[in-house]
Image (cartoon, rainbow, N blue to C red; front, side):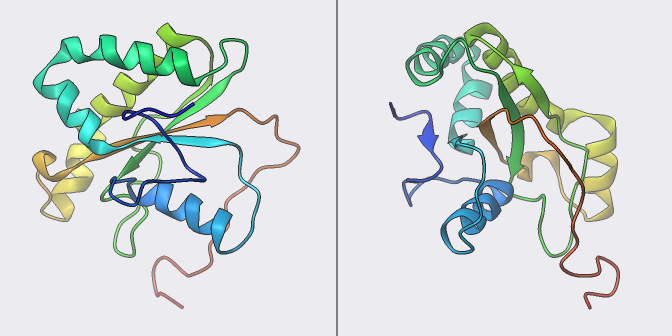
Length: 163
């Protein structure tokens, strides 16, 4: 089920702001035909609504309840406008929550991801690129948890030289 707060990543509304990580997942899924866990995205406009009206989280609770299976576990991940770009990664700086289950835990995890913009490591890294915290927009990816057999990091380009 979809609503105006949460969008299935495999059928995105082209007018929403997914953030770089969600865009990259969408590219892997649609263009590269690589399987990714079932994923949803909360666009960064929703974070802005929450910041201007914290009571908005009640609407979010109803949307989460209508979208997610209370018996499944999920990964809640950042997808900002500035991470995973050609110039900067912000790798490991924004919050990720794993094995999140139930509406209350999903709400809490989403808020933690949004609030991770204000942590010291993010602030210091952003300063290196002359980025103000006000310039950071945060979408949130919610993915079904997958028990990994293997995990790792793949660089398709040298992060230092671009080769």
